[in-house]
Amino acid sequence: MFRRIVLSLSIATVLLLPLAPAEAGPFGFRALSGAAGPGMGRRQPPSAEQLGLTPAQSAEWQAIRRDAKALRAATLDQLEAELDDAADALARPDANLPAIRSGFEAIAQVFVAEQQQLKARRQAFYQSLNAEQQAQIRAWLAREAERSAALIRALKTLRDAEA
Image (spheres, rainbow, N blue to C red):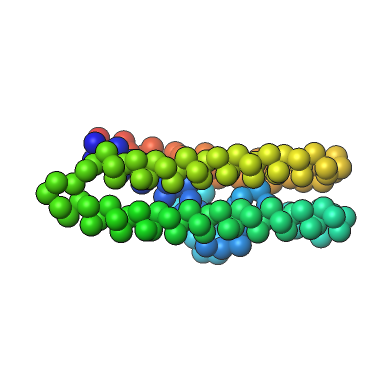
């Protein structure tokens, strides 16, 4: 049971940490300077200027960025509060581990549901781009996919080292 709680928390951290405090692009990634480790040096997607967006596209781009940032901030705030509650609960001899787990699971479920809505908006935005703009986004996503694969390999190495 405790292992499930730690695993849930670890997954939430891995999902949110690389995206959390800095300004994120409309596809959900942020820029980090001097970050350590594979996959942690996320770069911004091509800028509105680089893509040659229309004013309407630029406004949607900014709205998606703003909403994605707000979702991450709210989720991190909820996780912080839940961690405080969990620490208090775990200090008691009658700690209710299923209740602690369900608190984290509820936060994760809301995050995933809202991420799905953002994903749909990102996809619609992508579809509104011309072929050249889409090619720029795809090239950037391919680079980010390789960085993510490197992060996964690093996490697997850490996992296997513990076994």
